Image (tube, rainbow, N blue to C red; front, top):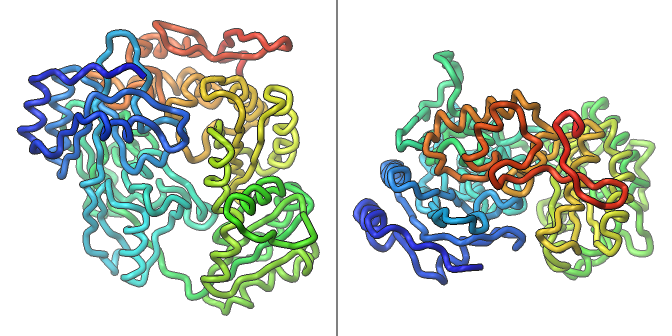
Length: 507
């Protein structure tokens, strides 16, 4: 990677005056860690890293960068999987971005137990928020395997989903209000915790899922939930995805208090066992699919499990149950350790997609063939949240910059009526395929919002939407073409050759 263009001397002095010299970093070793994402697939040079400690300091950074025309990349725990929190590869004479770390914005306010809410800084980790809620006898509704590193601001920016969407919804459902700095340095703040406030556009919700392209989230007012009295977890071996979807449907109709239903497959579980040193879940047996079922409620754990244990599709010899936290953690490990196990094989193309539940089994069967045709030597690992139709397609083998397998899988998703991103966001990874899930009119509206709230185009350029020079093209609906260096949308014909596809052809 070529050395980045250094920050203009005037901007560097202004940033040091606003934040203090120790929070403006240009050491190459420090910048190296902020210049590559967790997967190792996405990387780009940074000209510096700043660590503001307040909303006012964030605003000063944004104003200074807008005036100097230096782009900003917002970074929390850097646990994202689509390149949305790291600088892009160098492009022409554009200055390398400045990385704005939110990690010092980690304060968590007192829990309002009557309202069941708390306010957390954007840099607070999910684990810290969970602990604050738990200490007040409440619960935060989103959980991720990266809970010790993922930050609240990043989770808001990506509308993170995680393990309990089935019961509590995604991050959007937990957000009561947001404080943020817009692209011109102005501050919007809605942290009062009002559940009813019909006074115009809901700017807080507009920023949820915007991936840092409209504003830098600095604090969030979060909704909390009652802590369930008891929990039970079961690991169930099944014949495949169709059996898993059918079982979830029967449990829902039976009124089972589901909080998570996670699907994984024999090849992924075998990889987890090798990488983590775990014993096979059912020695001597290898069911094609495994389902982690978590139930929570006011009943005793055994009573919670009754709808599951009594189901005709559940067999004793392929069922393990957990009635305490230690046992539950051991069963959850077969699902939660998939991501780290995949990383031991190589750099993965991570395709986080969602399908209508009725199409999930057919998609799972077909995507295996699609990957085998496009990348015959690749390792494919599938897992996901079967209760909400979210499947994680992990392909290890193709080089990081070879997008053919991404293209083939995402087009298959579109054909099945799904979304190309369920919970990871678009980032830089999926910008060329966004039109598979969004119409030209929607893309034009999104581009207009970007221009309005970030007029200089400095916030996470190239994330979610193409970088600023392509906006005028987006507004005319010409989203499937290569314009001013922006990526086109490749399509593989029968001979494996690439060609551009119009939005109408893609849809």
